[in-house]
Amino acid sequence: MPCTVCCVPATSMVSQTFADHCFIRYDHRDLRRWRSRTSAATSTSCRHKFDQETARDKFTREISFHSKDKDVSLAKALLYVAAEDEAFMAYNREMDARSLLNERMNVSSSYDTKECDSMEQMPLGGKTISEWLSELDAITKEVEAELVSREIGCHLVEVLQAVNLVLFELRGFKRCPVLVDSKHSYLHSVLSSGCGSAILVSIIYIEVCRRLGLTIVGSRVGEDFLIWPQTAYPEELFTVTSGHSLFAVVNGRCVEDPRSMASDLTGTSLLGLEMATNRDIIGIALANLIRLHWKRASRSNPGLMLTSPLRQVHNTNDKPNQIDKSNVPLLRPQDLRLAIMASERLLMLQPHNWSLRRDHGMMLYYNREYGKAVQELSICMAFAPEEEADILQPFVDRLHLMRLESSWEPLGHISPLTIT
Image (cartoon, rainbow, N blue to C red; front, side, top):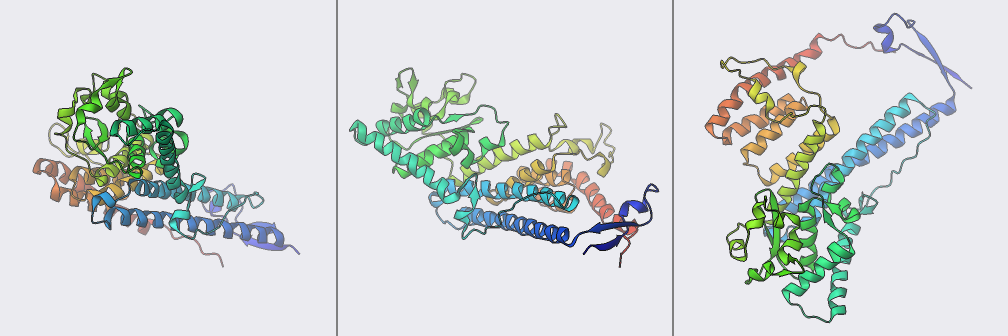
């Protein structure tokens, strides 16, 4: 039995091309299908939001609750990062689908509303987190099998040669010199495709060697992050065999590039480098994510830098320029939010890093979260050098006004009509 629904479309209040009232007839079965699909979409979207919060909580626990840095798992922490970002993107997809369902009731769609028993069982790239961790175990077993087949002992060089064979020849892992695809910056995607950023390939190397009982250390040298085994005889890493040193095979082309600082390293100079902690290594991976997502978010604004608005506040005559919402560049919202999420995690590791907090506040400004931007930039000014704080102060003052203007805007709007 059809029913008649009377509604007043919002568009009729601003356009004379529509009648004052419209009458739409729905069949009860159509309404039931619409409610069922909307309910499923809502359930799924709630699950994705829950997954985001759970992944962030797991990440926080992993980096915070271990008193010893060596107990922090690089693999788990970065898989939690990937899980949160994947849940966020899945949530956005579900919201798009839900919007489509609201517009077209006859759209065919299916939803998987299955709940996960634990974070480790949460789906990520076609597997669970536990299965991605097991993938690292599988690589380790392949290295062990290679050592057994050669009937060799556990000499450091021989173990590294076996790791190199499995990772770079049999498995085909390689470092991508230019990162344009975000999948190369997430651990599970690199394990799946074999292609990733230099830091993630190095992390896989570290995790495999850790499972073999071999300690791998690392340090940032210029723009590169280099790793090598902890040894009393680092000179043997630079012995050239078949045209390449073991150090070069482990770290890739940067070691043999004369333009790189890494090309000047020797066994002696390795001993003078500052070793990165596990938390430092996670921070490097997160910093790479921030740069990648910011670049993608600002693609339509070539050359736009996070700090560009700070330079625009003052002209050459030191007269303040006005900034307002009308001249805030439009960025890709999903990539900007992913950059902000990576920045939030990095701030957990480096809470007193004033330049990082400044950049985080600027991303919030670009995202038009003026209240949060003021808060972060104000905290930044407490840690920043005096000259940097002087640059930030007029910008923060203007943001205060923009925040107030934003809070006043709803007062000037006519409240929507209520239909009874």
